[in-house]
Length: 203
Image (tube, rainbow, N blue to C red; front, top):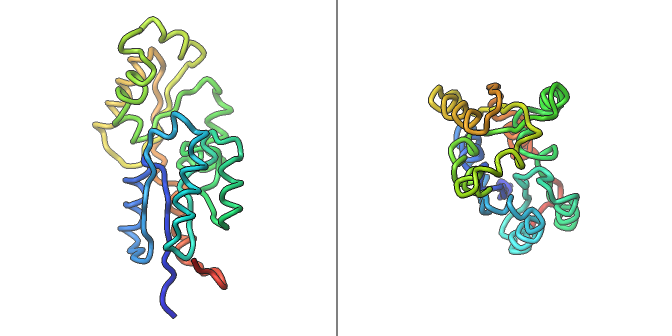
């Protein structure tokens, strides 16, 4: 029996991490495709974009590389229609850190702004420029006045990235904390998805 052809349809912010898991675990029957990371600025558009790709077919099973990601349950409605699964949790911070660890960090201080490797690399474009702080720095207090710290949830060990994350926190005027969490549930869920076979699957 030939292996199933598996699709992982992920957020563009997870492309590097998804490809890392597939490559180092030799998941040759898994194809990774990513939707534009900028969809996170308009989460209401995520379900339709996912549905459009799933409707195109060409795979036996699909795992969606998103949490709920601000779709207020609408993404799960799409996944039920197409009999697909997604990563656990509300967002990438949760499945990178894993649920219990993220809950502990959040409960310790709800006034926390989170960074991942992707957000550190693209902080100026997505956060500073994306919020208009490059043009209107006086808005900083409006956006971040209720935050007290930045927690950098790193996927890969890189001292230069830690320093960049610290600079991001300094720019926001917030305390800095680093947690090396790795790939968390993203890796375990993807490996489990790739190693099980659903009876009668096909597209």
